[in-house]
Amino acid sequence: MSLPPILKTSEEIAVFAEQLHHEKVIAVDLEADSMHNYQEKVCLLQFSTSETTVLIDPLAGAELTPLKPILSDPVIRKIFHAADYDIRCLARDFGLEISGLFDTMISCQFLGEERFGLADVLNKYFAVELDKKFQRADWSQRPLPEGMIRYAAEDTAHLHRLAALLERMLVEKGRLSWVQEEFSLLERVRFAEHQGPEYLRFKGAGTLTRRQLAVLDALLRWRDGEARRRDCPLYKVLGNKALLELAQLMPTGRQQLAKISGMPPRLVERYAGALLGAVGEGLVVPEGELPLYPRGARREKDPQVDQRMKRLKVWRERTATALELDAGVLINNAVLEELARKKPTSPDELEQLPLLKNWQRREFGDDLLQVLN
Image (cartoon, rainbow, N blue to C red):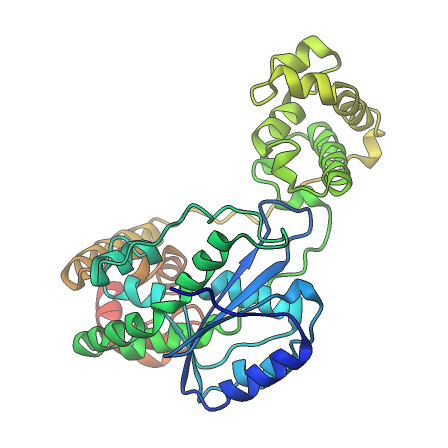
């Protein structure tokens, strides 16, 4: 396969966008650098029509605005595999919105595929073997090596025939309308704007005392500054597990620091002063100014709700097995809990539950009401 062209100028992209106006289906993917830089960004866009594949280099500074009407036109189908992250990145980095989505990964999940990674699916149906060695590569490097260019092109080159096959299978199983609703919901996902201190998003912070939380807050601020200085992801400075243990133990000397798992000697040598300084910063926060982790209102245990939840899970497992679906794809625990607590008794009351999707209500509403009542 010859190397695909890489568009780098606004003029080239405008011409390409005009060509895409005449397409009914395009396959789309992107590559980002989240594993290599402090501020992740989209580094490459891949587009495949039924006949050709074209790459776009957004780091070259070209204007991507001509792509907006293409990507937002619901008449032109956009095929992605695992679109969630891509849709969020396109909206954040370029203000590009997707309409007319067909997600081959979601389609695989709703067909009961146990392995739904793109490499697995293409190998199963077309005996195509994708070389995934560049999956964790630094896509911000320039120029891109030939191997990475070929890898990127392969990610969209087979999506047209894969989507056509999966759509036929979904129609045969009567599940096309199910995934179409999932696609419509997925088109609207966006990265959430984080408000408040970083420890509110840190797993395990809710188990800490207020003093430990102050230490964690100082450690997180130090790590963020160090990652920004080095232009690398946070985990490459220090992992979350080690940070949590630091906050729990609050070491005040090198010997204590060396006992923490995830702190090999080289990290102790490199960061001992900075880490002990951050711990010390948390230790001297006045009592009246210590951070407080917000606690949600505790729900009272309700034996009847618990019983309904058990019955719903039994129904879900039985139904998912009969449909050869993963139980979480059929209906997730959050929806089951809402059903168990609110206990709707009629189709009208089912209609009022925001978490329940239309296809779930339509296909399984009667069963759910029967289980609940």
